[in-house]
Length: 274
Image (cartoon, rainbow, N blue to C red; front, side, top):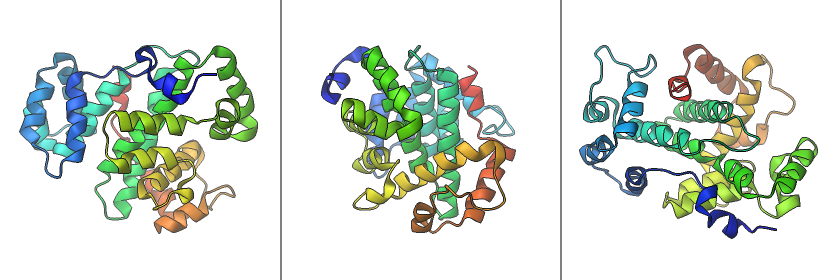
């Protein structure tokens, strides 16, 4: 039975991100990151630069004038937005195939959750970029487990998931969860502790001590993403009311933000299609 440490010690199980992205991750620990320094580093990676500019010029993010350089994208869109764009561009290309997972569908769902979490965070008066980053990473552990666990264990987890839920199924079969794996990877990549805690506790945010606002927002965003095709007028019976109440968000607010995002889109479809 592989341990989580063994799983994360094998490079073939892990997303492969460019060195420039690893350097960019360090800027999440800086109170005032150097915008132009970040842009200069990204510009040295032609593949990453091309993806970033394609995303920055897509209908959702595009300005009246075409953005031609990484530096211009950084100046016009801001450090936080560009940093998340670079991370998204890198992550979507970090793994080419994962047994049993459609990566386009996987990333489409991750971007939906990230965009919803950001939208909900904005209703609290925040910019929402930090929770967007956390949400980009929240499900990475699932990919790593599919890559690194023996097939019979993955199939056993899949069999139990409809009855127990994914995290409980994983805990029963291997003794740790996708959230544990994702949080540990974020720690190894030197993301701030608050990001690691958000990833670790997103599926049971009320257990986090101290409370993680980001974990709770991701939890609500996941619940909303499941309803997105048919968001009801009234609060669903299985809506995580206690989590929403802790965040100070009503069902009406959450419903309206989800519907608004449905209408406007989040812009990352251009990246998935690339």
